[in-house]
Length: 573
Image (cartoon, helix red, strand yellow):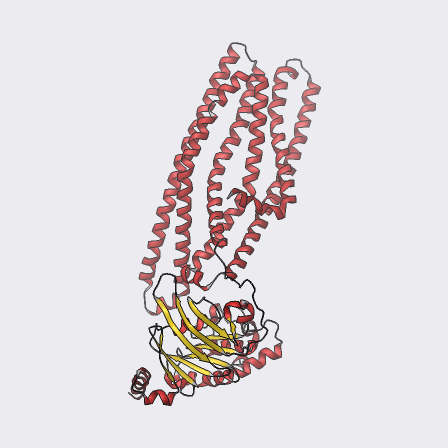
């Protein structure tokens, strides 16, 4: 894990090396003060060498000026190293998220993912800067202090350093508990963020149902779990810092008593004793820094561990010898296809279906029967468990995902629009499209007239997920987006079921225009909208139960006829 963390310094090694050199010089500068103090007490003051005293005072002042400049460099450019690394990791994480399969997002909440990308990487950034710097400066200070103290009196130095193993032993013993506590704290933070993201996104629903108290109760449950986890982390920190602090304080007592005894018996002089006290502080300060750094280390490394967990998630697998197909015509064949999510029961079982190029096929049946899942298999959002899906004779498992999906357009019931302008959302279908092409797509989708009546026209900002637009306008924007993409295969997944009848009729015109010349698969709830389909497939419990034209299926006393008559009676009633 440490080696993997260090590898992220590589792109910024030049700036990192300069930062470490500056930190090294700062550590050396800190060692000068007790050395000069010892010489003043033992030599310059007793021998009244005023010129040397003033000279070394000026030298010390120059050293501190240099230290000030280097400290600025370390604080500014050292932090930039951490920021650059954080940006690299965030970019790497975002790119990886784009490559993860649908199944990953089925199991992970948006708020949890955002917590990893924002909060965890922020702590990693701090660790990336302060970690090497604190370790480096502290190591130089400890070694430098130890060597110089040995020149004063090695026996006294060994007496003091005998406490170090006890300090290390205690730190190692309590570190594991603190590491586990911080990891649990990270997990609970992610859960709180996930709950918060869901609650804020659904604030209008909560208000409509007057369920603010329920939402607060639900949030407080996660918040209490966070407090409990954070409390455990701080309790572990309390054991760690109080114990190590006591050992350091004990070390101060030993230095004072042992040094005083050595001075009393004339083994060392007063100047040596003063220098010893000063050097011990220089020795203790980096130990304190290392102890305080442990909290940052635990926080940063648990964040990095969570970063690695996400980066190590397997991405969508491209075929080994993938085929790049520029254009598919749209002849689709399901050959004995079965599918299931992991260890769950089979969602689809032995599906055999041929959708001819340019045909319009409707999928109907009870909710949960597998209609949407079947549609998700065509663009290879999920891999089939058994069987094959072929388009124009090509097994989709052999096609590159990009070339396959470029030929497929999807209009869903739950339209997702990005925060931005109307123009940007339509252009999502073809990022290279001209303004004229975007406008033409909008006209075909029957949304152009609505857009030009808006104050800012195509530059109108639609708000989060298109909140400033009506349901019908959002749906037509998604249709315009597919018009611009111009795919050969079209999937309409209950694209009008959430709309009122008047709006549905208006949008149905746009959909009929969109379907022209394309292989179209429609998942329909309202059977009145698919009577003119070339073929209607009835799916129940993952199996094809009936198939045929609207008229053919009505002549049978089967599932479709019962569904149709049931809806017709409701409509009449």
